[in-house]
Length: 346
Ligand code: ATP
Image (cartoon, rainbow, N blue to C red; front, side):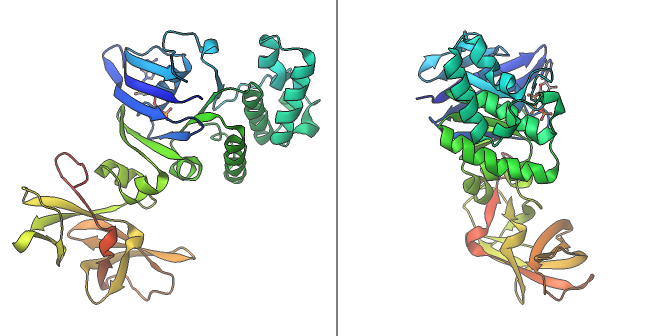
């Protein structure tokens, strides 16, 4: 069992606070993705779990054991990094065997483990090649095989696919997902790529300015953002936000529509809807079309709504023209509301 508990972890670099009191529990065999923009603290948090960085405050537990005072090699973890640190002067076999030799495992076991993980990563035909002669994708597979060969309880990955071209990324993403699910390890995976996060994660921890804003399943994070930042960061294009003004009988006025909404003492809150959750019709938000982008399966229409930008994904055969005044009806069960001051969901 290798559940991970990050308890009240803070990290300061001089006067700068990179992490504020982060709490996160990761279940045994769970695939947790840390997602956020550059500089939000993802790598710092991963390095603290790895033991490459010391927290200024807080505790890290792995498998029921407190590890924040243990060196990396005693934490039962393996790591795969962005630049994957495969040794070019060693063969693929020796690269995968590297950690096993350090552990002084018997030759027979080394061979068994190398062969098994090489097969898993589809690189068994490359074992005798020097790693310096491999393509980026092949080197990436070697790096993952080397981590898996250690049979770790926990694998930590920091943007492991970022050096690959788009097509290979897609292929490796699917492969990684399959291999890691089969290997029964607990995984923490850092990325700033939301599609990668959505596709791989059991749960996504969305980070912003050194805090975890929401940790939930990909569907939950997408459908029910806990805070405005999550709705504006996840989704391409992201969620639309429109000011809402209190109207009679506890309802809210939003761009020409009166909608039932949450109870709030405030006179103004924010209405939010995803671009794909509106239908063009005779009733709805008042919108003026500014840009039309036919994207094949659908059409992306950028409009003015209440003086702000609003993006709607409409059917590809929608007959709209620049300058048209549209009515965009939001799907009632997809509407979300946010408090403009706390930015939390209402
Ligand atoms: P990226 O996706 O760009 O790698 P990240 O979310 O992983 O970003 P971190 O590398 O964790 O971000 O950095 C978080 C913040 O802490 C950044 O503002 C960074 O400049 C700062 N930081 C990280 N390491 C150090 C250090 N050794 N000394 C000073 N500041 C640091």
